[in-house]
Structures are given as C-alpha cells and as structure tokens.
Image (cartoon, rainbow, N blue to C red; front, top):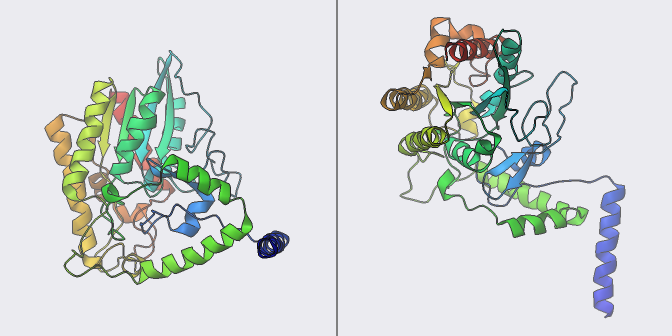
Amino acid sequence: MVALGSVVIFFSLAELILRVGGFQFHSGPTYMNFGFPDPNTLHRIFKPDPVLFWTLVPGFNFPGAEIEGVNSLGFRGKEFSVKKREDNIRVICMGCSVTFGEVNSYPQKLQELLNSSEFDRKIEVINAGIPGYSSFQGLRLLKTRLLDLEPDLITVLYGWNDHWLTRGYSDMEQRPLGEDIVEIKNFLDRFRFYQLLNSIQNSIKIELNFRYQRPSGESDTKYRVDLGDYRENLKEIISLSRENGVKIFLLTSPSGAVKGKIPKYLTEMRFVNDPEELIPLHQSYNQVVRELAGDEGVPLIDLTNIFEEKDKGRFFDDPEVEIIHPKENGYQLIAQELYLAIKGQ
C-alpha cells in the first residue's frame, strides 16, 4: 500500500508540475507512417480517424481573420447542412492540400464566381480537400461521408501524395486504430504526463523516420499509392458517382516543378529518392487521369496543360521553394476553368 501511495503521489505531482508549467503535447495515432502529416503537425489541425487515418478538427480556426476555418462538419469553409436544399445544386471539390488551399482556395473562388452569375438555381460549393490525402483516402471519404451530402457534381484532384515514398507501408497496408482504441487514447490524452511520454516517443519516431532504411530486398520506390492502384481508386470514384447519379470532373494536378530546381526538402525528407525523377513521375500520374477520363467518358479539366500554356511560372513561387501549391492567381485560374466547365454543363 505504501508503494502504491508513493506511485500515486509521484504521478499526481508530475501531473501538477506539467500543468502549472503549461506543458502540452497531443500526438497523432501510433499507426501513422507518412512523411506528412508528421506527429507535431497532426495534433494541431487533424485528429485520428479509424477509417480515413486523419480528418480535420471540426471548428478549427486558423490565425488571421481572412482565412476560412474548418466548419462543424470538418470541412474548410462556411457551415452547411448535411441535407441539401431541393432548389440547390451542390458541388463537392475532392482533393488534397491543393484543393484545401492556402490563404484562399479554388473552391472558395469558384463559389464567388458562381454567386456572381445568373444561374436558375443556387450552386453551393463544398471544399472537401484534406491536406496529405491520397486517392485511397479520397475514395474512402466519398464512401463514408461525401455521398451522404447529396452532391450533384464532384471534382477530383489527387496525385501528389499518391506518388510520395512510403515510410515502410503503403496506404492500403496501413493498420488504423480501432474506434475503441481511439477513445481510450483520447481519454488518456487529457493527462499531461501521458502527453509527456508521447512527446518523447514521437521525438524518437521522427528521428527514425529521417534515418529510415528499408529492409534488404525491399524496393526503394514504394509509393503510398502505386500507379495501378491510383487508376483503380479513381475508377471506383467514377463508378460510385455514376451509381448515385452524380456528375464528375477529373482534374490533373498542376506543377511548378522546373528541371534542376526541385526543392531540396523533398529528398531530405524522403518524399522522393532522386529529384530528377519527380517531373516524369508526376507526369505519369497525370497521364493516368487523362487516359481514364477518355476510357470512362468523363469530362477532363487538364490543369497541367492549361498552366503550361499560360506559362506555369506565373502561378507558382520560386520552384526551389514551392512547386505544389499555386499562388492566388493559380487558384483563380483553376476556379475559372471549373466555372466554365460547370456553365457548359
């Protein structure tokens, strides 16, 4: 009993000291083995999810009043009801951080363009872009949440995260925590001493990720979603959309990459093995989108070619710094192309 009492006193004092000192650390789920989001980023704007791996924290507000926050349903943008109004047309933009946006987003700009137009019915745009998402997660998101929102049209833009190197496991090989484990973890996460232990564990995990060496015989080019699975994920998204009477637009992923100027962090953090492989690799995933659109008879918005034709350098910052997320004029261009496509429908 004395020993038990001593243990209780020790942990109580440690908890008190950590709380008075203001220590906090909220870790990500233990199954995470991706380059992004890393554990330190995960706890700020994401939460663990047993099916989708992670989702946005509902109600999260970004610093700066001009930046759209996350609504109560866990999507960036204004509040909306799950059930669509009968006189509305609902457009859902699926994608990764390119869709989620920076200060602004192309779904936000698309909504502005549609609001200024004379359509017979009100068109509502929902930003379903989640940073770090691959087509694998996008397919699951469509199955579990997006179809319940009664979309009339969805736009699909994935690719970047699909062809990043794994941290040992591809997306389909991930083993998410069960819902009961997530609940237990969330309960324990209220205690600062538990948070301290997690901060130590995650520091070690981050270091191991940077030093990660694949077992001998394992391929150095194992992607989160390989090219064949990328095609199958998009194909199933098309199939599910059609089964539910939803129109679909496929979008290629524009890139600001310039040969010889690929950002160093992509190799330093092991998103790619060789920077010179990135441009042809990204092109191969975009080519799948083009071919699938042709095979399935789906409207294609080839943003990659559109950006190239209009001098892509105008729409991205320094190619040695940012090649994935366009500047505001790039988001405006994407919104304009979507607006014209929707108007044509």
